[in-house]
Amino acid sequence: MSKKPSEPNYQITHPLDRPVIWIIALVFFAIAAGFFFLPTGNSIPIPGPANVSPADINPAPRFKVLSDPPKAMINGFERTCMDCHVIIDAKPHSTDLHQHANIKLQHGLNTRCVNCHDAKDRNKLATLDNKTFDYAQASQLCAQCHGPVYRQWERGIHGKTLGYWDTKLGKAEKLTCTQCHNPHHPRFDPIKPLPGPNTLRMGEQDTEDTPHHDGHKKNPLLLPQAPETTDSHLPANESKH
Amino acid sequence: MNQNTKQNQESSSNTPASVGGCSGGSCGDKPTRRSFLRTSAVAAGGLAAAMAALKPLMELESEDRPTVEKFLQKHYKEMDGDEMQTALTRISKEVEKRFDQRPDIRDIKPMDGVEFVYALNLTRCIGCRKCVHACVAENNQSRSPEIQYIRVLEMPRGTTNVEKGNHHYDHPTVPSDDHYYMPVQCHQCANPPCVKVCPVEATWQEADGITVIDYDWCIGCRYCEAACPYWARRFNFTKPKLPKKDLNPKMSYLSNRPRPKGVVEKCTFCLHRTREGKMPACLEVCPTGARKFGNVLDPESEVSQILKNNRVFVLKEEVGTLPRFFYYFDERYPASDEAKADKTA
Image 1: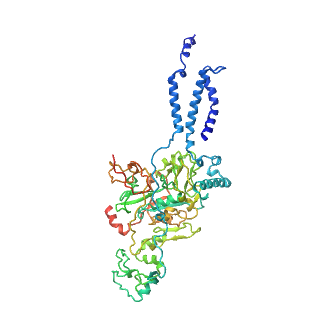
Image 2: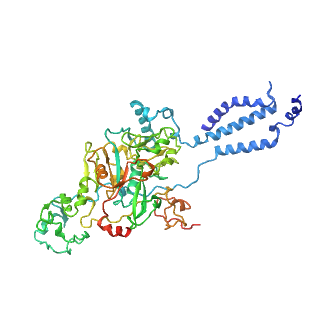
Image 3: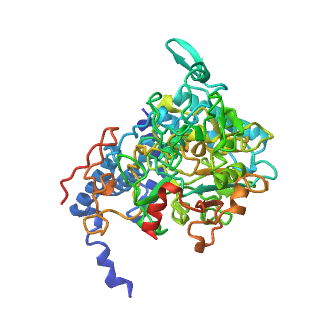
């Protein structure tokens, strides 16, 4: 009884007999085929590699340890300091350099050669209380003024240690003062930084609204299109909206 | 060719579906035109959907398609010596095929009685980014797009608020007068949130404190990346691009072997170097000696001395991650910086 009235409904039209269903099916099929056959890779430009040469990341110490006595090539001959200074007298209070003009002496109050160099034996270094040291022991000479830093260096807090942290497996190469610092101007010169990140998107973003806006040229969010080349110093496209 | 075989497979696997498809209509002894069309419509739809689903496989290069060997490989912790050797041989072959050189790949275990700690002197760091690029060269990261484990933040003097930091500083020379520099990398936390969130245990903390990732086990969900409060993890959105000549052939299973697309990676304190007693690459290249590394269980080590003698701090202490990466300052500014220090104070 109850089934009878609904019977005709089944016979009206099956959904698949309606053309619109076929059109929809066709469209979906085309979309699926499109996914399959067309490349779906995104088109976000990927910046090239950073321009860094192996020399930029060479871990070798900045300066070599001088030999004892220090030697220099002068007119094709290998000479030690005393080869000349045996006849050229030291002027203990002189602060001018007539020879050795390549030396830039910027060591704070320490403006006299003989504060560190031995006035009598130029192949040696000497403290103010006339203890002499070889050039290899220069750190102990530095200690006469830089006591706290020297103690920190002894403990390994200051300075740099290459080689092995585990001395059972290999030698720790603790760099001496003069392997990093130029004794005549011990402060490090400012250097050029290596290229910054070009795909990093984090931290405070530099937009025109931010209070610290100073046109950070490397902010990837401000680059309309990331640079294609490896040159990290390309100026960013300044045409901002 | 591949496509054809795939289609054949698909159509054969769809046969049962087409049988089921006729249940809606006049499923009689003889197929009518209508039921035939209906069935084939369903079959075509199913085929199209299956093709769309398999589409990503087409984009893989042959060397990236999962092999049976790789598929059956066990979790790192469950592999015995032989199984690890098999895995290393497989990886070695893959690397040789891709980079034309045979790598020296090993599985290096933690050393007994060693817990690694890193200390970084913020007074000395000049922000030259040498550590960033030495790390990239050592650890075979993707060069394009760039993946870098170390971020160097340029911070205004007088604050430790990392939100004020700028990654993209580009001065002609560093250090800049009004800033100090704070490199951030994986802190190898003693209570690592990244390990807790991993749904498949593809990342864990080793006995020497280093949190490692098994790149063959990572499913690329990036939960760990989201969990890390230091933004120390990186994801390979694309296949890592590394020129053949730049490959570092000395590699280990858990650290710097080439990664596939779709896995997370991070700093491992160069475990392939440090577990053999050497220093990490970022430390070796630092021109100012701002970076210090060693075994904190050895009271004479440099890092122990720093923790004993200097005032140290950790980044985001309040989140309770217990980092093994400590920042410290010198007791005083270097004499040349004292004027600046006064200005700041």
